[in-house]
Image 1 (tube, one colour):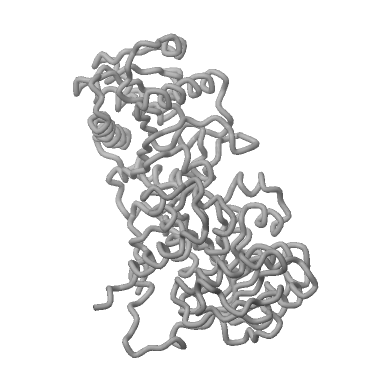
Image 2: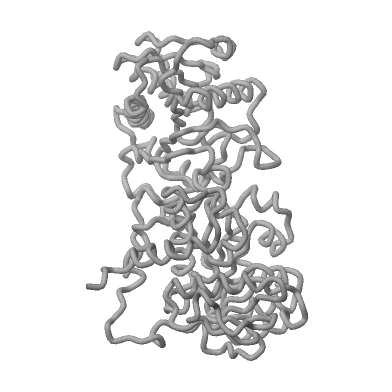
Amino acid sequence: MPTYFHPEDRLYTIDEIRSIEAKALANQGAFTLMQQAGLAAADMACQLIHASGASGVAVLLLAGPGNNGGDAFEVAFLLSRRGYQATLIMCGDADNYSPDAKASLQRAQEQGVHFCTPAEVLADTLTPWSLIVDGLHGIGLKRRLDRTNVVLINYLNQVSDKTGVPVLALDVPSGLSADTGQPVGADDTDGITLQASHTITFIANKPGLHTGSGRDYAGRVSVAKLDIPESFFPPCHAHLNTRASLLNILQRRKQNSHKGSYGDVIIIGGASGMTGAAILAARAAQFSGAGRIYCGLLAEAPAYDSLHPEIMFRPAQELEFGSSTVVIGPGLGNSSLAKTLLLEALNKATSLLIDADALNMVAADKSLQNALASRTGATILSPHPLEAARLLGQTVAEVQADRVQAAHELASKYKATVILKGSGSIICDAYGEMSINPTGNPALSSGGTGDVLAGVCGALLAQKMTAYAATRMATWAHGRAADDLVARGIGPLGLTASELLPDIRVNLNSLTSRSAA
């Protein structure tokens, strides 16, 4: 069945948004695009104040020098007209605003909105703000924030953290790149960005709100399309990896089936001292529906897994790769035997996932890279940022500075489907289709969780899913399992990789076309 993506889940770059916006501005009516944005944001502002239970009516708004500032003027005007005490910091020159922004500014002034300076707000320790609205900088920010704005944002971040006042960002939290999810102009991931509890993003959703630091700064994201005609939007090749988009891909199992119907998975890894990694991957494949699982270890293989005796253990070199899905890398090490097994998997495996130590071996060996590029079968690479950096010949900082671009480069260079793991894991295939995964949390920042993800991917590949569909589904179910566990009070601190398995199974079953009777 074709994949369905909700319009709000489409992700557009800044350049694409600018193109859509230009068409919309050329065709806007008397009720302007800025007025529509202001109305949508004002409605959300009222909802947030009501939901927070705040008894006061004081709202602080920041208006920057561009059209994001114009949006803030319009919100201030509307909130003041609804009875709120709107205080606005104007950080731009009135003469330099667009005609629409000037019109919104005039409406705010005539409505009696109170204007003040950053210094006055910094000196005010008494006003109990019910809401802070961030219209300082939107998607147009091209360089790091100046000193005045840094001081102001640091102060407001402290106020919201101390008092719990909600912060609504207009389009994108000030200081954050809508494309990369990292602070604009920063040389690391710790640049200054306003910490929003909620973001209302205009026209369409943006990738930077959902990956890298974006997930920390954007809070809960909603989309206001502003009634722009669908014909103004170009074809979209990037989406949020939502549950709705995964429904019906994994079909309900027929009564007339057997273990051979759901594929064999071979896990290759587990050198001396690292057998646990391979066993975790094998258990994950078992919980994810593969028909048979063989765990091929480089270290001496145990007779069986006492927790899951369904898994069959073999010395890695005794397994035949030709008709099975192979997952290679968990605990593999870098021995000569490991390289031999990896080269055999690259040449013979019909479907292949390369993870962990196997990725580092590919990065360091041109012959392995050539074998990877020559593959015709389904291939998945699942690097974390350091492994991705090695594969691209970059630093981790360079990869994290633009995770979207790094994932595209990896997929194109190695002609594979890639999961670039991390906050907002990015899934990308060699043809440029991309998804950003919204599930998962810091509970996954522990050893073994990547091995579990590899096993889930392998099991779904074995069930005849495409590499792109398998990676999307596995990444969503893996992250959602962590979310479900944390919601039940299990983690994030101390959650173990093994604890993910039952919830992954539940989540995968929830995605089938319909439950068995």
